[in-house]
Amino acid sequence: MNIDYTVVALMFPAIPLIMNVYSTRFHTLSALIRKIHDEYVFEKHTPPEWKDQLNNLNARISVLKYSIMFGAFGFLFNMVTVFALYLEELFVARIIFGSCCLSMMTSIIFFIREIQISTKALRLHISDMDEKFKE
Image (cartoon, rainbow, N blue to C red; front, top):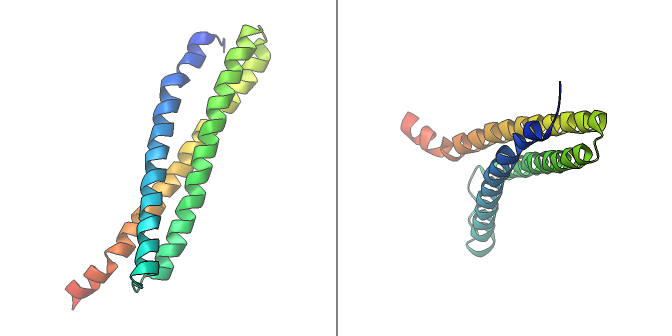
């Protein structure tokens, strides 16, 4: 494959968009954690599924951290690819661009996992309503 600036430029719109999505998820998750923390500390409110929610939130934090980290590595590798092309190091640019693509794919895989965990959290959240309707 022949690599030049146009190939590398394909990643530039995608990376900021995906990082924006990750940031939004992170801010939403942090707001949820703060809300649950305030309910526990100030109102002494502990829902029955509290322990499961904490485990779920910890898992989401970890997975989202890796999503953001690999997305950032992808952005960094993309910039280094541009620099390698500037220095006319085509072989190095190919390897680094491959690393960029692998980082972005890994980031997306972690994000898919975070979506699965989030879905489980939503099911856990409505589980008490499910039990009431079954009675």
